[in-house]
Every structure is written in structure tokens, then in C-alpha cells.
Amino acid sequence: MSDSTSLLSIRAKATPGPAPSGSGRGLFATADIRNCENILHIQSPFVAVLDTARLDDTCSGCFGKRQLASGPDYEIALKACTGCQVVKYCDKTCQAKDWKFAHSRECAIFKNLKPKVLPINARALLRVVLRVQAKKNAYTSGELDLFRTLETHIRDLRDGSDGNDGKTQWERVALTSKAIKTYSGTNIEEEVLSAYGAKLDVNSFNLTNALYDRVGLYLHPYAALINHSCDYNAVAGFDGDELYVTAIRPIAKDEQITISYVDTTYPTRTRQKELRERYFFTCTCSKCSQAEDPEPTGKAAAVARDAFALLESGNAGADLQKLLLMVQALISSKLPKTQQPFVSILDEAIGAQIPDEYHHAFLESAIRFSRIDPTAYPNTSHPIRAVHAWTLAKLTVYISQENPELAIPEFVKGGWQDFLGHGEVTLDYSLLAWTLLAELHTKENEYATVPGFKAIVKKTFMEVHREFMGNGLDPRGLRNDIQREWAKFGKVVTAYWQCVMREEP
Image 1 (spheres, one colour):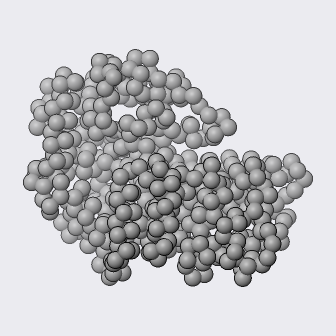
Image 2 (cartoon, one colour; image 1 turned 90 degrees about the horizontal axis):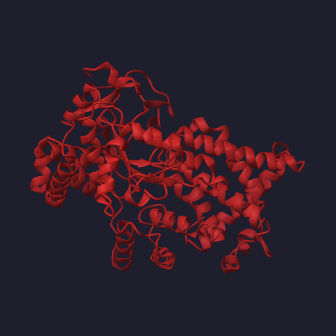
Image 3 (cartoon, rainbow, N blue to C red; image 1 turned 90 degrees about the vertical axis):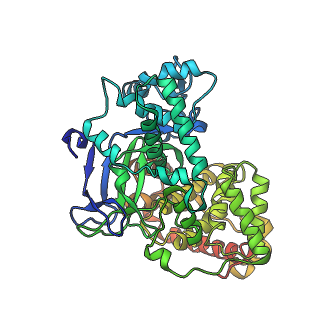
């Protein structure tokens, strides 16, 4: 990079270099990297914006970081920008940060467009354009040089290569560029603006919160150098507007850093299709070279198609009844429970049932934690496994506070006697919660999670631990009780897995 100041907000244990197999450039480890060690930490984005649907419930200054840290008991009431009324903030601190970074240049434009709100890609492009021509807090020359080297794939977009909908994507990019030129009053040529828009489309990350839920779009040209592999050795995570790229296995010096651009729990054919249509390449990693199970046929194939269509709609959790019927259809068709589409359908069902149907969500979260994640995410340091353990912990905390005598639902008791015996079955949810949180907290360096997630876990663990101690109990001295509860929990999971999910124990 030609301007060393562009590296002031970046801490990296990787450097750019030519990638093999015609993959352009990539990032390569400058030293041996340990499992769960941060490879890249970028403190300030090139551009980051919220999804349109998150503008009302997420702070545009900290991207929800302070909201998550405060917890549900101390919910922050967001206040809208008095100028445009489009973006919202936790307080004046978050507002001042965003005003200085970008919003001061876009606020009047947003106000003039009311009641219209620009879509996310247009807001991202507008921020880039306004900061490119800014006199204060502008991009450094190094940042711009690196941004300009990013791939656009304009020819692929225009041609609609590989049978994808590239032409439609290009039409959107071109129309967005035309609109932003008008709104911003920039003298940057429309062709250049279209190239900027294409770079955003091809190189941006899903901006997520500390719990790995998507909230928006993020781009930094240094991070964009990281190439894809379905057999990746690192993961990206966000803590507010800070990006962390973390190893999920040991990485040797000079080894290329790779992340996955797509959800690798999906079948190879699905991953390859998405990679061709959005990123214009074919992955040849070891995972893609493995033989896959044959595709389902007959009724199972029809159910799988319907499930994938529901997931692709982006509204799977909007209709709980429809979602639960899909879960039952997948179970009845005997499609594998540790593969897609069941993995994501179950995720949606758990989220949709919290907190109203928390006893169902608890059981489903328990089998996800115990039976599905070890297969879907075989790497034990994967952040999604930590997040799912956290969800189960939070459910057990909620049950222990709201209904500590909650028994296993009767609708599945009939076939459980072989595992659980006769009579009512209850669990000590408070001990289960303490153990899950203690495990997450004490082994936080064994998960590739961001600091914000670790802080949330620690805070919740300390609250639960203080509650035990306040009642004269120290869980650290209840080893036998904890072992007994986890043995009972294991039997519950086994019974649910076999009798309800219809899988062998």
C-alpha cells in the first residue's frame, strides 16, 4: 500500500500476495498463527451501512454493539437523527461518531428524499462517493488505491455469464449509480460510479452483530483481498464496526488465509451455484471435490425444494405455523437432520419460538447443540457453535427464572419410558444454565468469537453465579449434582432425537 497511514486502523498478521490458480491476490500469514488467534483486526470500515429493515431497531453509530451489551433489562431507546429522521442512535456519543464519519455529508440528502429511504446498496455507494470527494475525514490515498484495485466483474455482470441473472444485477448497479450521481451532485463520471457499485456488490461482507445476526453491509478493501474456500481456515466476525478475522485452526507461515463467502452447510451444488452467480468463479477446494450424498427423490425431494424456497424467501420466521409444518414435513420425509435444509429450518423455528414457545425452543436448541452442530460445524472452535450454546444457555436461564418446575412436554412422553423411566421428568435448569455459561466463559479463547460476544457471556455468567451465591450455593461445589443433571439432559436429548426427530440415538 502506497500510503502507510491507511494501515493505522489495521492490525494484521497477513500480507497481500499473488494467489494460486488464477485467483488474483490474497492474504498470506506472515507468521505461524494459532487456533482462535486474530489474523486481522480492522477498527474502522471503508463503508458500513445497516439493512433498511434494521434502521429502526439498530444504532447507526455502533451498529447495535451498545444495545447488545446493555441487555434486555436495560434496553436503550434509540433516538432518530433530528435532521433526516432516517437513522437512529443510542445517544449523542454514537450520533457524533457517525456524524463525523459519514452522516454529516448524507443527512441533507436523506431529508430531501423523504419519505423515500434509499436501499442499502445505494446508501453504501452514496457514502463512498461523498467520502471520496470530502475535504475532511476523507479516505487516505492508500485506501483509495487499494479500493480501485478490487475486482468489478463488470463484463460478467453485463453478459450474465454462466446462465445467472447478472444482467439484472448490472441493471440495478447502473440505475443505482445514475441515481447517486444525481442525489450527490458529484462530478465523478457515471461509469466510475458503476464500477464503485460493482465493487461493493462483489467484495462486501455481511455486517453482523456480536451474536452473528446480519444487520447490514460492510466493506474494507484490505479484508476484501481474502479469498474463498469452502474448506476455510478463518472466519470473519464483527464487534460494532470493528472487523475481526480469526483462525479456526492452526495456520502456517505463508499459508493463504481463506474464509467462506457462502454457507458451507449447504450442498456443493448449491454453494457452487451461489459462487458462480454472485462471485463469478468455481470453487475447487477439497470440500467441493468430495463425493456428495445422492439428491433426495420423490416426496423427500419435493419437501426439500419447498424448504429451500422458504429459506430463500427471507421470511421463513414470519409465519410460525407454516414454519412448524415445514419442520414436521422434513421429519416425516426422513431427510437427514444434520444437513440442509433441516439445519437452517430448525434455526428459524428456534428463533421464532423464543420466548412464547420456550419449552419447544429449549428441546430443539438442545438437539441442535448436542446432535446437529457437531456434524454441521465439525470444527469445535467455530463461532456458530458458541452462539448456539449461548442460545441454549439463555433459554435455560429464562426457564429457571420463569418456570423452574417445567416438565418435559407430555406430547412426546409416550415413547420415552425406555430412556427416562415412568413419571414426570424435570431438569434443574439453573444448574444447566450455570454450566453452559461457565463453559463458554472459561473456554472463551477456544472459540473464534469476537470480544463483544465474550463480554456478553461473561456478564451473564457473573449474574447467574451471583444469584447462586446470594442463595448460599456455590455451583463449583455441586459437581455430583451437575453430573446428574447433565446425564438426565443427555437422556432427554436422546429420547427427543429418537422419538420425535426419528433418528437413531
